[in-house]
Amino acid sequence: MSRLFRVLNRRFGPLSKLTPDELREQRRAMLKATLAASAGLLLSGPAALARIGRVNKRVVVVGAGFAGLCCAHELKSAGYDVTVVEARGRVGGRVLSFNGDFIPGRVVEGGAELIGSNHPHWVAYAAPEHFDLKWLDVSEDDDLDAPIVVGGKVIRGDDGTKLWEGLDAAFTSMNALANTIDAEQPWKSPDAETLDRRALRSWIDAGEFDASVKGALEANLGGDNGVPTSKLSLLAMLCQVKGGGCQTFWTDSEVYRCKGGNQQLAARLAGGIGETRVILGLPVKEINIGKSPCVVTCADGRTIECDDVVLAVPPSAWKRIRVNPDLAASLRPQMGGNTKYLTQVKKNFWKEGGRSQYTLSDGDISWTWESTDAQEGDGPIGLTAFCSGPGSDKFRAMSAEDRDKAVGAVLENWFPGYKENLEKVRFMGWPDEQWTGGAYSAFAPGEVTRIGPTLAKGFGNLHFAGEHCSFAFMGYMEGALHSGASVARRLAERDGVTAPKKLPLPEVVLEPAKEEEPEKPEEKKLQPVGG
Image (cartoon, rainbow, N blue to C red; front, top):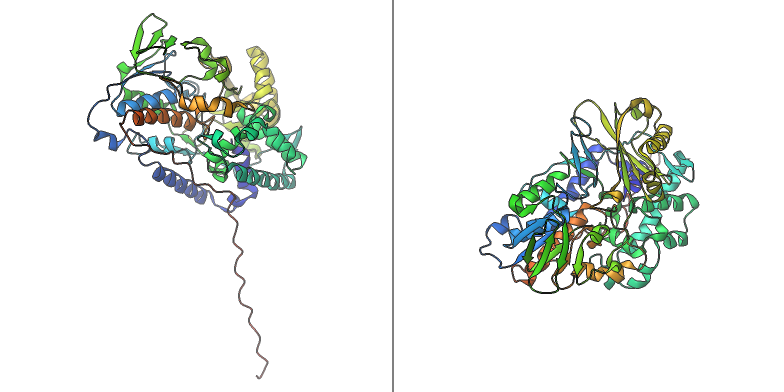
């Protein structure tokens, strides 16, 4: 959600003063701070090894995405009898890493991709005491041209400086408003209902920003959330900003990839749960929580009795499962319609013309980037086009042949030589995937306060997990992990297994660091000659 701000900051703002090594060190410092703050956050880990005993509770988790796997992993570590049931034949949900099977010798993320140094659960799981996963820094392309296209106009040079100044003022203003929000329980925030009913676009329109800044805000925030800002709750946006630490939301939320692919984390979590406890390729047809015990009925007719059920699939897929008592359709938040168009090209040919991998546009393609960025080795690489909202809908409605022509025309215009370097493509239409039905949550005006409390607390013995339940990290893998771990901790607290613990959000920074004025040397008075 922060790429535009980071790109401009690196060119015109405080980050422009840092060398690449200094920037990497700054990111590492943020990682260390996040890791220190997340100590003891998880029920698993070294502290869990000393826990003796078993909880006489059975839990069924429906869905083996990051939220479901995290929840099950933490519950099992706390002594619960856990079973995970997943409709797909793999774990990971909307995390899907193509490890050599799209581009030979390369990792390309077909789903969720970027990680923040301000994402506490990701950082905790990647630490050596857990799964020891490694990071790849997202490249900044400091000396390359990264055009921003708003209203058909390419913004460069002095216009880029003005755009940075306008966005810096806009985001500083948003930071101040976000700082008043309770990111975990936003319905308890001051003026929560008013902020929730207000569309983000209304806030943009009311700002004293020029047309290019407003256009860039729409392109960036609407594009990343997957819906026009006129259809997005202002409160939902403020939650994300506060969850990321306000200023660090814009600078630190999308700075890493997981070396070897994000799906490694899904595999490690599943391994910790146990092969026999994770059932793949088996859709759940019905969940009955109306009486004790709860009963989960699967597509093959088998039933699983349990004390609690965790529904950890996207709300857009709930319609495939009967829930008794009925799971009201009104509980389903709006989902963004983002898609990814993956390509394999012969080389990063754009650099030959001084072009960056990054382009932001308010057109049919919102963003581009190199999907194999920072990976070692020679051979073909990946270029991804990220499509949002109406543009995504347009491409989804096309035949594959027409879509390839349409996307190819845009990319050839942005990256001359694209067509002659293109080798193959793959379209990731998550809104059309049967077990997903959308990209990620994008709460409409009024939805946070209306359905948020139920999503956060569940009802009875039915609990919800997924990025749509984490208002501090909506749309991110961190949101899925946060929600899964939160459900696990809530059950453990209910059953007396552990003491309450509050999520450690990043330290709030409201404004970018100001450069200190150098001290002026003391003026020396000249002595009269012969004095």
